Image (tube, rainbow, N blue to C red; front, side, top):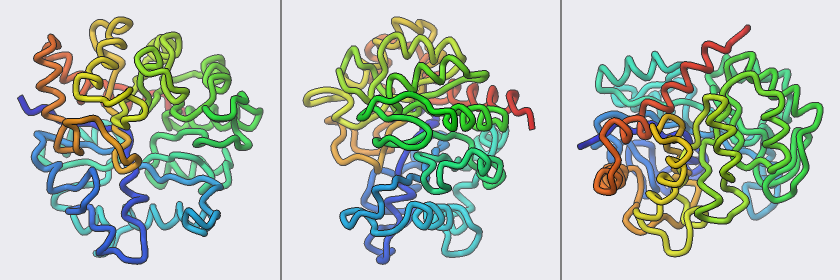
Length: 328
């Protein structure tokens, strides 16, 4: 069975940047993990495209550009109207969306959907007061950082908790209807968010730490906390976060572990981290491999309803909840 796919995280926007567009490829066809030619094989598709920034970008081994400039270029590459912009020049196949209802409407028309997200607010100087502008620009999900400490929080590599400015960021985001994404955050920052959250919280691309003991993954208590907010955890396809020599069965192992705490499969989703990592599980090569993963899940005992929840319904549901939380 060919299930529609709602993937909560990829880094394709950053991958498509570069002086040599032909080398980077296009959203329609490229040598990375995601393009529309392969995604069209799915029965439906919504992809969250992260605009990723970090202060590290100014280092020579990155882009030697400020994160503000990179952020502006990512938005321009993907979303600003014009025949050279990736969404616009493929508008017969894919359209920008701002709500779950937009996604449903595109799905009914046989059209793919693109949703903008923020991975690291360095692109607008970590300023909570600019979140309303980000919402108006179409962003609906935001992490508080990446793998470094910043003025909002510590990271999975540094350990500090949420700052007062970080608490303001969470409050502002949730009042607008922007989902707070705890992927990459420190354990202390995670629990600080859980103390103040007034809306569902997601981990857009984080696996089970019990299955693979990596700091980027979620403990069982973290998954339960996300579940209890009404949020979801998106299964990450990066081999390092899956385990040693991972296969499709390893991906299934993470899902089945979360199912022990979510037996009806209401709080697990997809968040492939595609185009943001180099090594994937054996048997998973890109967006075109989601049907093979679904087939393996069915073979291991998931019902079609549970796979549909995992692949589509759960992410749609949390988008609905974010809209209901909008207080502005």
